[in-house]
Length: 359
Image 1 (spheres, rainbow, N blue to C red):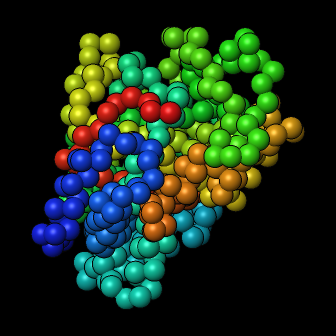
Image 2 (tube, helix red, strand yellow; image 1 turned 30 degrees about the vertical axis):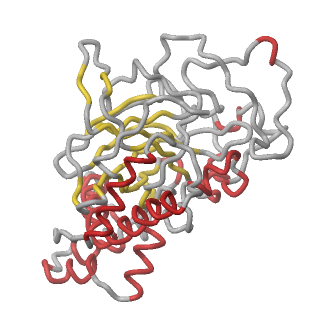
């Protein structure tokens, strides 16, 4: 993979993000903060050809897994899921692959900008992170029922455009009915609380307290492999009032394994949230057990564009050029057989953030 070099002034601005690293959910306001965000944004886009190649290689690996198990029946699967890999898989050769993956035509650039998911801005982690007890595992579903979702999460360093091996990707999410492990019920005195009306917190309820400390479902972490990829098995997340459907993530370049299979976190270089297109959210809403969501027929789901705290919009960066939305493909011939989602995080590997919720 060709390594792209930054101008010195751009690299310097990226490194300056250390100075504002303690503000995880903060819209840049000063000229300095805006320039840091723009530098990260430019760096992520500067890495776009590398990211496109990175993602294509990961898709090819999944295609071989999905299609390789059913010889002679490839035509039963979604025709468009791997069409951009058709030439490579049929033996098009290195030149053909380079033209498909690394082409710098306007079409290719548009494809990169719109469809290669690069997540870079820092946003709030939310109130349901557990600083201890996240197991190091790839299958985080445990006994939670829902639509199979395989996640393919790539991590690149925006300072070098190179994939980052052996960084720990920590994720957590709600189950099909919109609850987080350990947080089943509201505070007793808030049992009849109504969502906030208007304002930045519109639609939100007070955070549910942690009362079941042994629950660990839909929480877990896994290190990226030598190619900078961490893969997870989970279920499609449910929704709760005020928030668009999302998956939380943190990235730790420094971490250590504990005897109980969890980890002790060191330096934190990224806090973010992943999202899904509203079209697929609506399809999943009609499937069991998502139909059992207690607010389905009352408050209903919050669309991405109405996400409280402006998190969905903030995840696009100050100029709206990041893409925090998973690129999804069918694992089989129909939605109910499951989905695989790709996203690449462009992170500043030298950054250091506080590992606690700032509200």
